[in-house]
Image (cartoon, rainbow, N blue to C red; front, side, top):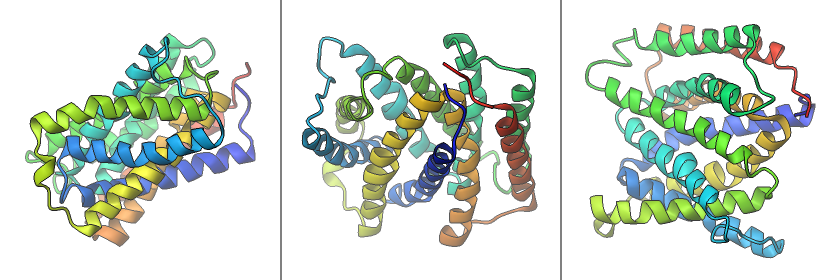
Length: 295
């Protein structure tokens, strides 16, 4: 993996902005859509432009080739499961809190990368940075105004959802030679296959009367926060590696708090601000000690 360049940092920041804005859109979408249906429609919206892009560039989609199993597994672990769990969690907690809880991804991603990749081992200083960032998330659990007995389960569900992103990231590395557009489109198509029966069995999407606001939020989640963001994520993952890519989880809460406060009028406490400062410290330490790993 190469040392991060200016374009890599710009793309990482853009990815953090897109995903940071996704949480208040998820919150708005949950006003009209249940979790499985929300995740299903989100990936349908994402798959359409991705499929058109592949056809336009004459890229073969290998979702249903002889080597279909890894695409299916990534579609399940990297899209279907986390999308659903995060939708469940965000329905009962502040949107910016969901974004801040995503800061657990670097810790789980680094641990997984240490055991399942050859060139992304945990170092002492990198561990310090990750733990500092994660301690900012832990501090949030002492703020009863934000996390309490009524919603702490939903906060934990969100953390579990974020962990599946790390699992999916490890799996995606195995397909890095299969092409950005192909992998993104193929895994998205498989996520539809998993989510469709779950939506039909456990929810009643045909009875929905969604608002325009919720539907527009869901459209944004699909086309921008899933389709476009997944293309950016795959590019970062294959060029710079999993540990660099998971640093986006430190940027997500910063943008999430900004959007939650200004667009959703969500309450920001002093503990939230302290948590943000701690998380930013974690970003600095991790970035300073993650110089890039050569292939």
